[in-house]
Length: 201
Figure 1 (spheres, rainbow, N blue to C red):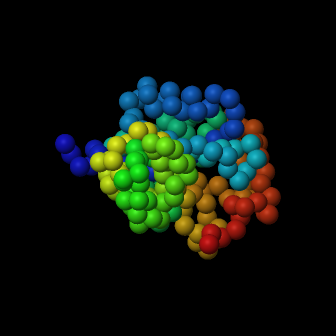
Figure 2 (figure 1 turned 135 degrees about the vertical axis):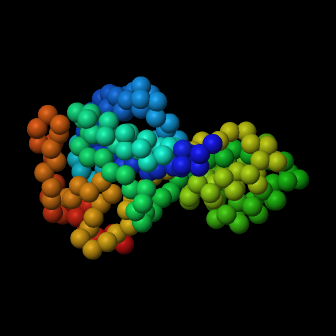
């Protein structure tokens, strides 16, 4: 298999916070045959807009096609491929691992080593919460696997361009910009005091 076809790319989309938007976006990817490795969505700093983070597997052509088709959706305000940018990327995972009195201390040592934390203790299991890059989560999972993984939940990657002069944001939509929908209507006029206006830390 060509290594380029298995590369992962991070795409950020700023969308209208309306019912059915996520369904339409996911449907577009399904119809076009794009492979989504992960998808995370949540509210943005601008009222009425949500931000989606996609991790798409494929070559550069695939990513360009995915971005182009996303931009055609009426609810999508802005799409950016930040794969080549200097970003902060994180993922959260909850891992439920089988635990007994004899191995509980060993599991806790591994959890502490990865700066993770135990958020639930049962008579036969522990729930571990860990946050970080995908490689860190994969490594902790692999170490806990011999004990018996009962359940795993991962949020998928969320990413943000690191702070630079001018307060650039991940989707290049500044806080002072007038956000225009595809139908030509003004979706939101952000004020200068909005969080996205300030430089990152």
